[in-house]
Amino acid sequence: MNDTQFTLLRHGLPEQSGCLLGRTNPPLTAKGWQQMEHSSASLNFDVIICSPLIRCQAYAQHLAKNHDCELIVDDAWQELDFGHWDGNSIANLWEDPQQGYGKYWHAPFLHTPPNGESTSDLLNRITMSIECLSHDYRGKRLLIVSHSGVMRMALAWLLNSNQDGNPHLSRVQLEHAALLHFSTYIDDEDTLWPQLQGLINPSVCLNSLVDK
Image (cartoon, rainbow, N blue to C red; front, top):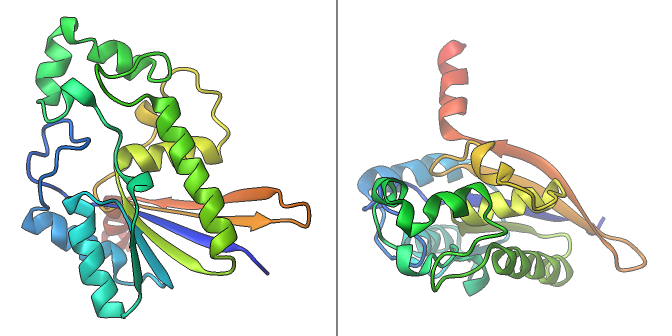
């Protein structure tokens, strides 16, 4: 089998967590570090790929060192560039209609953050990277340490979203240190076939353990 196994791990709680963090680059909090340690404890992987932003890269470097495996820092997996909104309080952006954040939230494929990156460009860079990795690492297990926006877009792609409205934003719970699992298979005609395998939120797992 030449299936490539992808596990996407969202970074843990960062500093400035109430702000819109695209290319703004705060480190993880102590809690965020613990969240990632909990989510990654039972993972198996051959290669780690990460966003260059410190809230992803610092833990990815730690994990790669502990597991003695290859680490690739890749710009394709960094968060959407929110332009002039980047680093601003999310609450303040919602309260000021002149900012246009509400329009973006409700129709992200139709509206782009001022001086920022379009959602279509985000989708393109992620899917191009998935295709390249699927060819270059056939049969391997890849752990990608990334961001909420990136993971939501990967999920929309896996489910063949029609780019209408914002279901990848408003209909999906995706916590800090959440995990997204999928695989890709390349057939004899070089066609890529992705398959969603699971989305895991840490609080759901903890609640399940408590219930038992």
